[in-house]
Length: 292
Image (cartoon, rainbow, N blue to C red; front, side, top):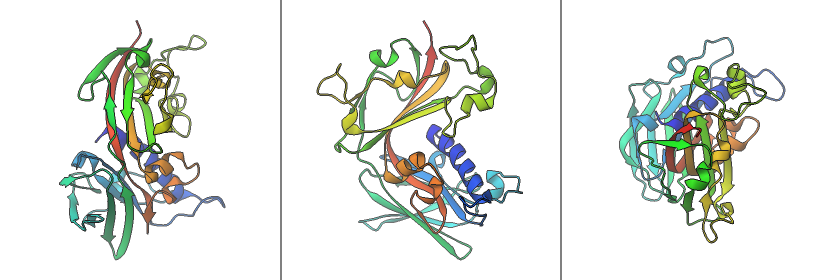
């Protein structure tokens, strides 16, 4: 499972659990909704690692687990709008996950997801962002050993995209377990987070997870006139050790999911159910961050 898949799945499962359990006037009561989690990655196949997750919401008094919530043997297809080509997705070895590695996702193409199970139908559409060209000395196929001091200025990421209004997501996530997490800049003599609440206590997962969506046209810097660049990503680093940096062009569904404050799973492209079905184009850079 990819880094982004793992990260959004954690957020998504928590949001769906909350939505399924809500008993307040501000939120919906529990219903056995079909929930969808997944996104397509431009110019890459829909592999088992990037599979679409199909589950049922679980009630408050249930011991939640993906295995218990998973919907097995659903009829799941993805249709390329325009050509009309339909691809059937197959069950992954992990219950509830559906994929087909023969499906190569095309940029600037709209896809419809359709799920039929127990006499119910859920659909969703996403339009894949255009190609995002990234130029940097950072490697996307191996771990980058880097020093925190001056990192982004020494190793900027230059970005090219055909759409000035395309939303670009710069996303940083620390992969260290709690017991190994160490602040780059200790405060009040505290070198490590005291508990998981401190480590990822904010609703969006900060300080472990920090992200910034920005329009492509706004990626300008006085140091690189005439170019579009991410030369500030080191400011998103809070912890030493293993971190994952992603620079992605994201679709509207994904953008709504990460920026909608209340119940994003109801506004992120799913009809007949809840969840998110989106698409991205970009790269992941694995960093091992050290101090000089």
